[in-house]
Image 1 (tube, helix red, strand yellow):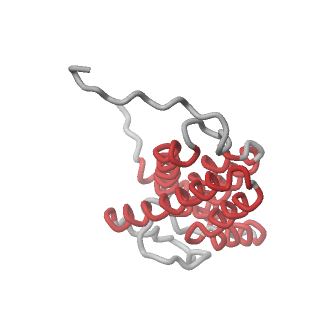
Image 2 (cartoon, rainbow, N blue to C red):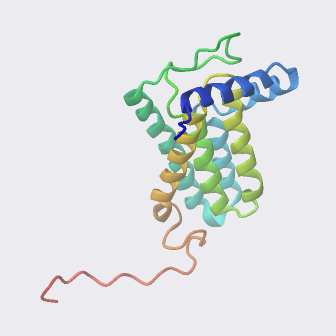
Length: 195
């Protein structure tokens, strides 16, 4: 039976993507995505724009934006617990400075995935724009050399999970239903064994 050295495979993938950062246009795009994604800023701003533009579902947009922020904060908590150091690159320095020393999970990937899922639910047209932008932001963190691929994967899963757990709070009983629109009937009160 043959085993795959996952850590070595991850380092090779990171090195290949980091090598792409030697091309000036790719490096500039990766830096721009990394900077705009710091602390979830791009996604939080997008959520506030959505709330301002979609008055009918303003509350849902604000709650979705809060979920993106909560997912980001959760990633910071996991980083503090796991304490995985950032990648040590064999050649060259990372293309951006980082706020912290720990890399697992990627907070950029967490907030990007959370926003792609949440905003895609609220604005179907956003399903065409948010996921590719979120994916580009995730890849940018590899190109600039500050995360391992597993940091990105874990962050994306955490962001998606956070939105899934908060979906009912975000939108009400039905995903994407406008506030004040049709609601599910109230659940009957629990009466216990003796009814």
